[in-house]
Image (cartoon, rainbow, N blue to C red):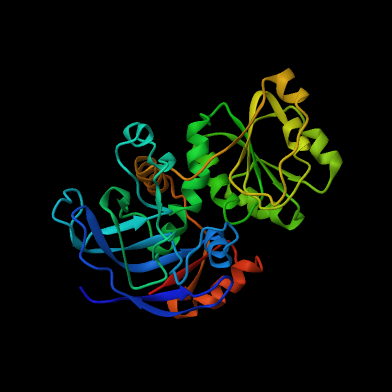
Amino acid sequence: MSLIQGLAAHAAGAEVLPFKYDPGNLGLQEVEIAITHCGVCHSDLHLIANDWGISQYPFIPGHEIVGKVTAVGTEVRLLEVGQRVGLGWQSNSCGVCEWCSRGMENLCPASEGTCVHRNGGYADRVRANARFVIPIPEALKSEQTAPLLCGGITVYNPMRTFGVNPSSRVGIVGIGGLGHMAIQFARVFGAEITAFSTSASKEEEARALGAHNFVNSRESKALKEVAGSLDFVLSTINADQDWGVYVATLRPTGTLCFVGVPPSPVSVHAFPLISGLRSISGNPTGSPYRIKEMLDVAARHGVKATTESFPMAQANAAIEKVKKNKVRYRAVLAN
């Protein structure tokens, strides 16, 4: 096998530079993917900067990968050379623990990230365990599908986990990279959707994506008007808020679920949780089965990421634009 060529960060916060590595022999249960598209996710920025203290350099970022299978290990049965496939945040798990055996591989303690302690998708090729490589339905365009493989499943999985359905009243906090996909999926589930944003200019777009109501979260009067009206609130933002205000929007038995990570600890009073059987939760990405299901739902219902394309060689420009929140709504690198 020839060397894989990519763009690697060599130190915390550094630009990505050309980097080649020898992937070694293809594992029995591995596939190799020739990458056509790779999304630029906020997680990539955190890994490049070592914000989470888990990065090892040099490494190639990227975990929203679409491409074609170029080689399969001898024990791979369900994928074949030439197939268009996707690979998200996770590239392997132990396969035998309680969580893997329950089809919740995304909770495996030995989970392997696609670009954590290994090289990811800002490259010409990548490898992963075949269980985590998902065939992509024909109806989906590659560029608009890449962000679904991390961002999309991050918002889809909690809606499925918490049973969002046509009777649900759902709030989506933040109309950005995650939020614009969350509104579309909540619409597919038939929920009544209230979009929350600090930017009044997002109202038109939120409604076009499927939101029924819009709340400018800078206006306390508007927030008070939706108190006690929602069953499920999904926070997609990475900013601090008065979370008690969002707990107050919940009906009894409602849940405030985090998929965005605010910089400060989340603080709320216990009484509203106790008195209304309300809860606060978080949700990681999803299992391979759930990703496959999500792609099928997206193909049948026309859910897609709003993307801005950059040549792979311009990855640094894309990263910079994402860092400054100048992309509407997901940057995608193309080979």
